[in-house]
Image 1 (cartoon, rainbow, N blue to C red):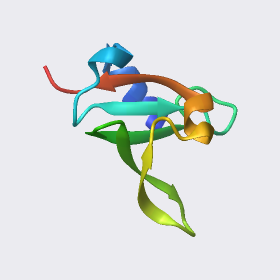
Image 2: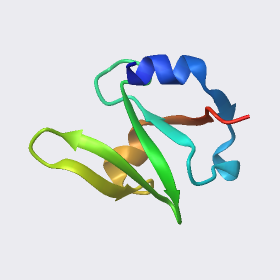
Image 3: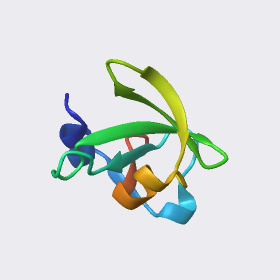
Length: 77
């Protein structure tokens, strides 16, 4: 599914409670949950940035992503 689908299916997680394996959502295209990454711990997440750079790891504190952060969710019980 899309990142928006994942956002609808996930259970919200407070920012202070994000754990490795949780999804982190961003508004990068002017639409809610238009980008998603997988939180790996220590303030970092892995995501498919774009076709040119491919899969990469970034910090949630990175200015670009910090400004576009919309929340986190989990698909686990």
